[in-house]
Image (tube, rainbow, N blue to C red):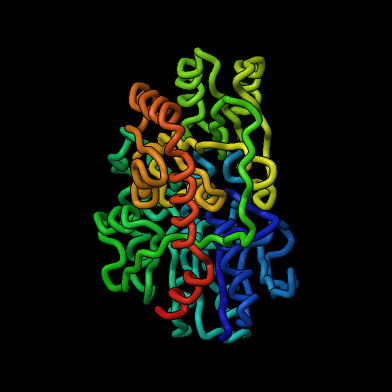
Length: 392
């Protein structure tokens, strides 16, 4: 089957887990013998018309959507410029024409769309005009809130956002199928009246499983906990370090931090001298098993924002590691209390302390929970995911 996959960012550009999921799907479809090509943005200002390059034997079409700056630079721009950028992005007719030309040239049988912010929200209209089957996959709340973030205790969306999501709701009303990795995210969009004409499907994100068994190695009696993710306030890293410094007063545990972000230098300056803490920086996904998870008892997910279906949980289960997670968003759909991990009240210091202690003092249950996590990972096998997507 000839399949087009569209996402605003594709390697070497990446912002988060959505790009990891997208790349995983592209590679697996190609591996299965499908004729696959990608449409994504270019970071080069002079590339306003589409061009084609080959990456890993896959055609990748890129162009620079006409706007006041590139999507890649959005986090460095002031608010007033971002507002103008978003308005242009929603109605980016230049992007619409480029996408339509590529689709007319390639004539795919199926278009799989993912995150479109930065590529232009008229993309789905281009697909619809050419009468090509479209399956759209959700990753966050960016169609209601352009930041894509929903912070705990800030659930009421600003009235200023109403014009934005009324427009995006109209533009995104037409996909034949809408896929959400979590029931929570689909329910979120339903309450804003999205996708009334689309078939709705809950399908967790895919995971490429390793055939080799991971040999856990613990060199001392300390219990090792892991934080894996962006070093940003909304990911709960400041909250976690505050709690962990109190939890570890007996010096019986260790916290490993893997990731990077705007708080990195601040955290190292404040906590860098602590014996119970180790910063490993960014580690590529294909090295996480050997370099990190082989020494980890539990992963901690302390997010203060609503997570859809976080990749850190998938990776932890893949490497036989139970998860201690904030019960927020779609997390309770994948982490089962006492079976594959523990759930605590988001942002609640006492609740997290209780779960950290529960994990520590019930270490005899670790092996069974580790096995449960490994079994759960099989539910997310990329092979099953591809079969289900192509069966829709």
